[in-house]
Length: 108
Length: 118
Image 1 (spheres, each protein chain N blue to C red):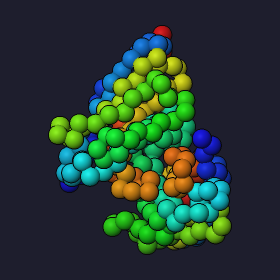
Image 2 (cartoon, rainbow over the protein chains, first blue to last red; image 1 turned 60 degrees about the horizontal axis):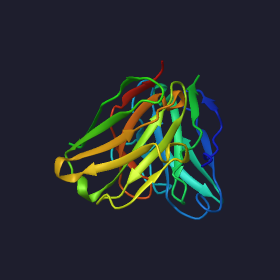
Image 3 (spheres, rainbow over the protein chains, first blue to last red; image 1 turned 90 degrees about the horizontal axis):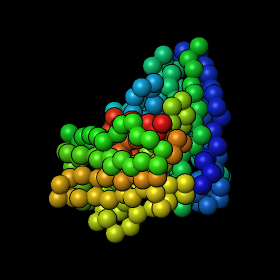
Image 4 (cartoon, rainbow over the protein chains, first blue to last red; image 1 turned 120 degrees about the horizontal axis):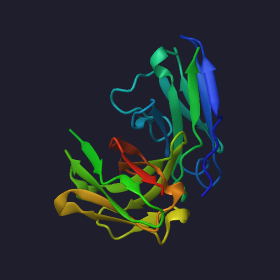
């Protein structure tokens, strides 16, 4: 049950945009439009911020957006703010109940 | 308000057992898949097990198959994780999460810490 692949780290200055990738296979990310993204602040439980590739739950700022191309999904955070500094994880439906390896986002 | 509250964690010796509980409120438990997800200290999220709405299907992480059992009691609004033959590598914060479909974990508890050590 191999995890989906994410870059270990990403960074950007306040106001900038950052994109985090999530690479799976043709059996999960590439086949289904059921990619979710989670934000986790230190010492806190994960929080759903994107589901079904592009949808945002109520209350999630529209600075967070999702997309997908082939076997890779992406999370873009626009207009970076200090509170966006956190760990981010993806998941994708497709027979493997796995999370991504996680990306630590640093706001410089 | 949807709430998930985990309990039952603690310190246990290798080879020992623990039973985690997740008390659900604010929604109809019987209409959702539920999952346990763990996070070892300083590590990423790892799905452990999930269970269908009526308890008729369960799926497990390969490394816990045969050692962990997920179950639920919809009448008592609770989900459980029975863990046995515990190993040091099972040490983690264990979260209970609601799956709204297609691995969309929309609500999480605050977690219960399991430490396996002699």
